[in-house]
Length: 317
Image (cartoon, rainbow, N blue to C red; front, side):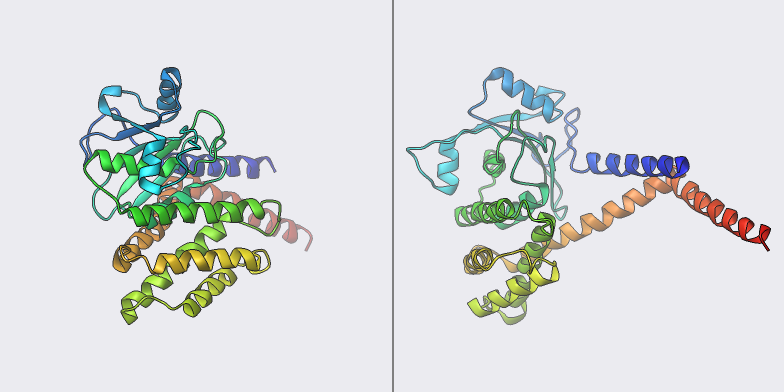
């Protein structure tokens, strides 16, 4: 038992190290497309809170980042909303532009303080918004939903001369809201897994893109219903997702498929980057385990168990 515990602890250490390093941004050096990574902080933060947020994002050298404030007016400009009821802008981001083809990588450095949105949701919504090839770190000094963090990403792109399409940004926000609502409504159900819903959304987008590319047209409402229904079943959510929740997804992706600024080829490329990252991550984890000697130790450990069983059997014959 002690040997098993040691082996598992070693494996978890390597896995945790691999995950924690994913999506990191080194602010000690300047080596990226925008010249400097862009730190976008919410207007609701005071000076000490801005400093605390920088620490949460591991910003070690202020001179190596471009600092920009994001306001509620920015949110209204990008997404629309109620001017008479301004919300707090707390969640902040550090964004690094990457080489073309690298895709989007999101790292939430304060997962306990981003209560509604996880990394896959941000990646999915960012793809919908037209964000490409960047590493995004998200942090908040206190618990917030995290729904406004993408506004900071849009501000980072705009401050570096890259404007995003407003229809796509609004649709991405709608996607976050729909997915967040479904997560909240199913939070206490043992069979529910929000990562499976995120995976289903990737499948839905991919199938919509396939119809666009192969047939040269947007899918009909009936086709979208079939796509959504199939994706839910493939991800074992058919006994969890309610009909009302399914209708929300169908409505979302009907709007999605009819948004002229969404290019099917681009979406396919970005979605494939998500799959490539998963495969690469698994390979990196195995490589680190192999280099550390953990693979050999695990093999030797289980070999010793087999030998012990064989010796025990032989001793009783």
